[in-house]
Length: 425
Image 1 (cartoon, rainbow, N blue to C red):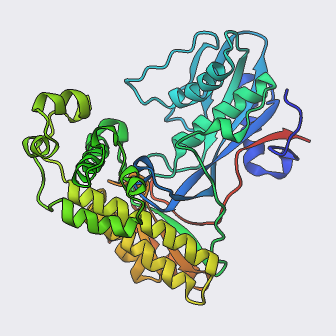
Image 2: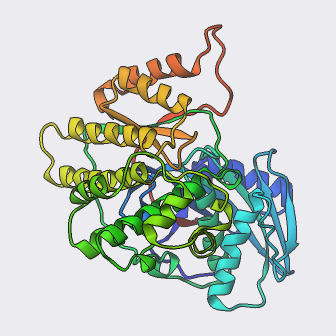
Image 3: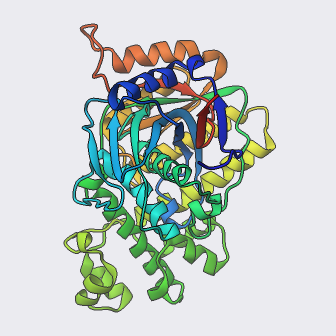
């Protein structure tokens, strides 16, 4: 077992109903009691949608909803995974022969990814077995990072069983990762509303096409400004090489790209390459048959959204009297851009956003990948009770008085804590 650290807390399990229930279910399932528990939060992206893979900052917030795993290391190599949700079947394998079927997004594969990531990081061949019971209250496929929370949880479970530690800088590295605390307004709360439309990213080409459209837009913008376009992969790189702001990049986009969709032949003419070169050197296998690319719209969204993230942060730092109103306006602009320029919304999300604004949200927008999932709204704290009641009635309650499907979810959330190991006191 790892020694206690800032990420470890001792708790009286009997004082926490959810932990106590998990302990009892674990005992019923495995005939023993857990040695420790691990939790990892979901997260909501307040603003900054579809710009991280373009090189830009986003503004996520950990939520109170989380994944919680009860764990017992065992002396065999057997890895047994169970879930409190009966929709997710039990799974068992050898801890020394973890195979992940990438063709099927099964729940236990996310746990195995976290375990295998730690195994590979430390170059370990032999892992001890364990019994694990997983419980989660993050709505799945809703854009609140339930799968990421499970991967993170599984990694922390594996570290704890091994008695190892991993610095945060090692846990997540990209481009390079920088995190800055942003103080959110105290007079408002963020409310998550689930549209009840699930969008399976693994089963759709929407996301893959958007990523490629952003890459192609970056290359055409770079060529227009006489940069070495063949090395450019992300829209942020063009801005950085030109040394101008995201707002100024909007003007460059207006000059360099046209609103009408591009076909592959026109992209080839702009870059001075052949169709074969486009297919083999730039397009990914899942975008080689795409006939039109909306480069202008995607670039306009990315640069305007990147600017909104910086404006949001600045308003939070300066805290003017009308702070909540200003932040709400940025969130509203973000949703319009996601809907119209990035085309990642859906009718249900648009309806839910309109309802939230109607009943008191200063701002409301889709969050996560889009095409379903959740909205996030900023609501003055004194309006919260009436807001929740009215949105529940308007969106989730059917005309015959019955509720929408069980997947519906509407809740206010405060910034949640990070990943944690819990030991029974």
